[in-house]
Length: 215
Image 1: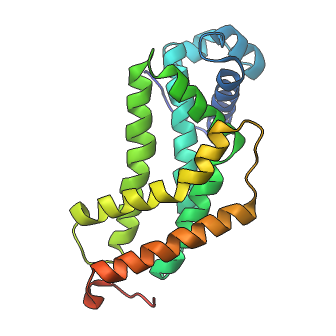
Image 2: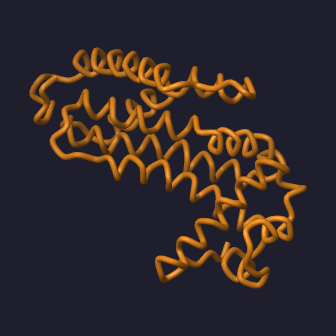
């Protein structure tokens, strides 16, 4: 992929628009039927610019998926507040992650990735590394601010938290087209998962290992 980032705010906004249009077109038509011509027709711009930035359709597809992944983690960073308790951190991270993952666009993209991975294994590998594994590592870094323990211990804990958090509602959204998950369901799932994780952490770690925690 030969992606280049636009240098001006207007250029970056334009680039985001192209990528959003691309992922929506891929979701609507499937990877094979979504030609560059159709995407450019919807998004505007020139074929030469798309080739210059992304190389080919596969490059554009991966760049559009990367934008989705960046949006998820960008939403958490935008909401970050120093001084949160561990419980508050679980609740904030979990709520943002579920809301982002359960958006119509994210669910459509995940269905598409799963269906295309047998023919495009590099996309499946990218999704695991940049989507799934990155979310585990990202929350392990959050835990590192609250628990004095090595990342080798925190990362598996973060992995179990993220997978337990998203499991039921995400599978419901993926398997039942047209099914919507409302905010009440999301908050209830986050609350249950947070309670279970706090019980586990306080059983696993000594009180002195918790950093500035009011739990």
